[in-house]
Image (cartoon, rainbow, N blue to C red; front, side, top):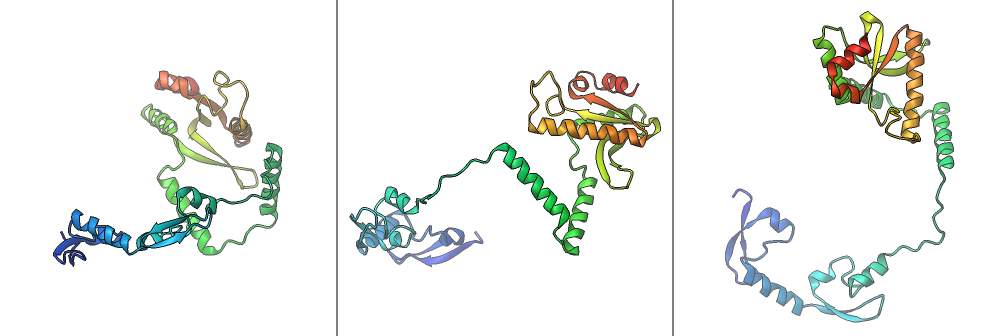
Length: 249
């Protein structure tokens, strides 16, 4: 092999071929298993007696074992764990969900008022990555891609991941599918995360956030002069063409 080198065995002095990668990690240092056992026995004989810093017990270590992190200070793994153990003076205090929300709002307000001055190189890199992500349909679910493909086969002019902007020109939201000729927006909703009431009783944190985002999308679509309709995942799986025709009509 190309990675092999010739090496002299430290025990029997025979020249053998050794793998350079294995030698780098401390393996294949001898020509065979018998010489390896003999080398270990010799190293153990050349060792020394050490005193454990935890229990005070005397123990014997070889030179290679002494080189390890706790080889010369602990007699066993239990004593080594006691050395590594961290002492906590004050107990941890669990932060409530209200405090987490307040801290997040405060951090967001701080970033808005005194934003971090990012260099132009970082801005250009982020812009390039965002464009590349859009070209590769990043963030578009499999459900949305399939629905768009069915609409194209039906002869509709379909727009994917259309950006909706506010009246002042700032970013508003991203719509899943848009049919510009019919002035229609289709949102592809999964049964669980987008508020399917037959799958959960009380909205969780992510579900409640999605409900607020959906309401904001409805307002933005109405301001743009579009009609927003919802395509449910369960209905699309049963009959893709029939579910989309029902939503479009």
